[in-house]
Length: 115
Image (cartoon, rainbow, N blue to C red; front, side, top):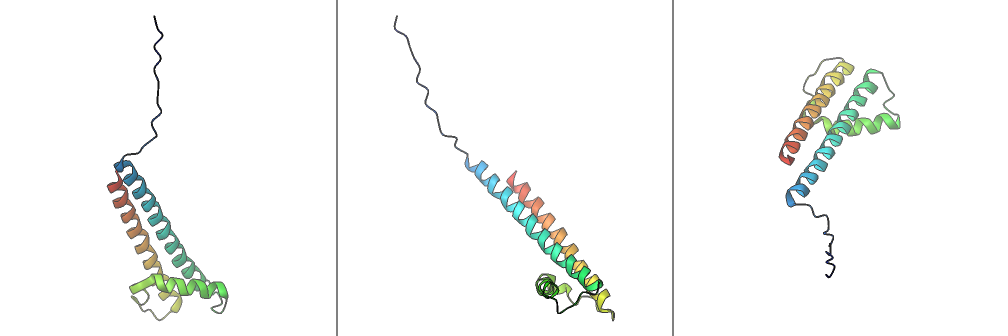
């Protein structure tokens, strides 16, 4: 009796379109989370530097100030107390909180779509 041998061919590990889409969306969710976190950190550092009385002519302070102004959008002059430190604390703090909430909501939506 002849010996019967089965030839096993390895199939490449192929991912379905749904798996690829889910992976891409999860990566996108991670990028959105990190981007939101970086913006929040920049805004919080601005508040700390201002309330702490950092030298506005310092390179680090001016760098953070320029970037935080870009991220604060309509919050920069939302409240106008006479004390400049309080103004930055309230407006930039509120902007940071808004970025945190919006980025978290976007991450949840993206992850929900990813499945």
